[in-house]
Image 1 (cartoon, protein in one colour):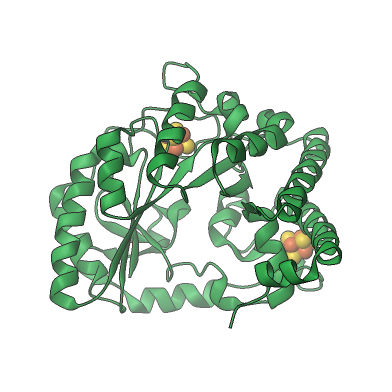
Image 2 (spheres, helix red, strand yellow):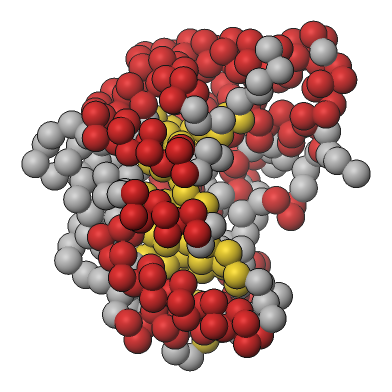
Length: 356
Ligand code: SF4
Ligand code: SF4
């Protein structure tokens, strides 16, 4: 079973779009140990994502989870894997040594040149210089680390420049999403500029592909793959099944946005998962009514309950912002795919078509 461990609700940063309420609440050792054991009680593998707040504020908990889960892995014969999402500010060579040794896949939340638009330390200071240096260090240890961008309206003018900057640093894998939630206010002008920026990124993405040094940029890669392989329900987010968050108090929820909502609590690390509640939740998943006739419904993230909840308060209602963004993204991805296919069909098939 895959668990996202919310080791702390605290963070040393205060990003403008952050949806977390920062407070000095941490996971206890008892909760952590029980979570480690529980991950081996279901399924054939165990996966842990160290998450927060900022998980590196609780380094001893990470080390403890690794020690305990390795013992459980040896006992059960089930392989274990680790991931971490971090703002990067606390990375050191010593920590990176451990990350390399334990093969912890890192997602670095970093917006490149646009970083200081939203991602600031708690005292208001910018984080760009600090995180740039940490990013270089990270890439030295883990060249396939992901850079994770969350683009709010104020960062849009620097979106394309930031993607180029991150690739220049050495990132070959970039995930990009727009910022959602109550703290974020998109205007029509912001969305028009977003479209221009995405087209600029598409040109960069295309040039990299044609040079034989393709860049993975999640918004385009995902849409192009979906178009080629068709709808694959197995790749969709399934609330309460694929990757479940464990809150610091040990309760297990369907997804991060639902932490604290008893309706979406599936149990806790001490008493285990309620399969009955999982089944009930699975029945609630539905294609939003507004999407039933849409030709894009099988390539759209309309089924992401977490995102819908964040935007509209209901897991099955899509916001107008998300609908506009999805249409924009799919159109640009399709135009890009057409050009790549025409330019080099063989390389295109190799990159995007399903293998085997
Ligand atoms: S680094 Fe993450 S948890 Fe911390 S303030 Fe920023 S978005 Fe929130
Ligand atoms: S593009 Fe809009 S209407 Fe179409 S499936 Fe997505 S959210 Fe629904």
